[in-house]
Image (tube, rainbow, N blue to C red; front, top):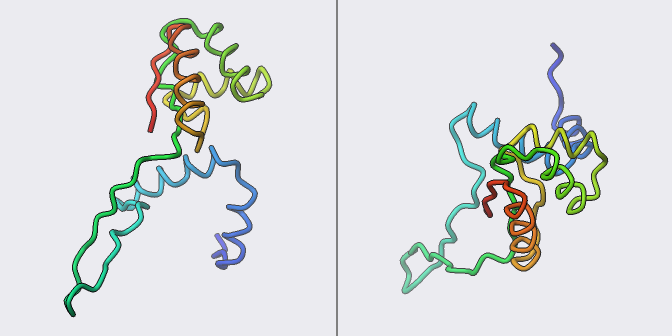
Amino acid sequence: MAKLTTEELLQQFADLTLIELAEFVKAFEAKFEVTAAAPVAIAAGGGAATAVEEVEEQSEFDVVLENDGGKKIQVIKVVRELTGLGLKEAKDAVEAAPKAVLEKVNKETADKAKAKLEAEGAKVTLK
């Protein structure tokens, strides 16, 4: 297998959807036992470096479908409504649970999506 250059790898990642890229990051973290989380900011205080934990309210959420609750058809319909996916793509997403159906949405959108999915019997988490 030929080794890919950094540019070639970046091009491959650019061709992925956000969901595919998120799945890759999870697999990468699991394989190499690392995390892609941002490091804690370091600030200088009185000549000495101290760790500063910024407490920010989360502004973007992922709506993760954990399972369809045994009501696959109803959940597929809601996934299609929320995402605009075609029937096959929505079915694949539901069957691949746990899977993010919406990524980086505001709190209000995430809550509404969660309520719609749960109304049809799905188990949903916000991350």
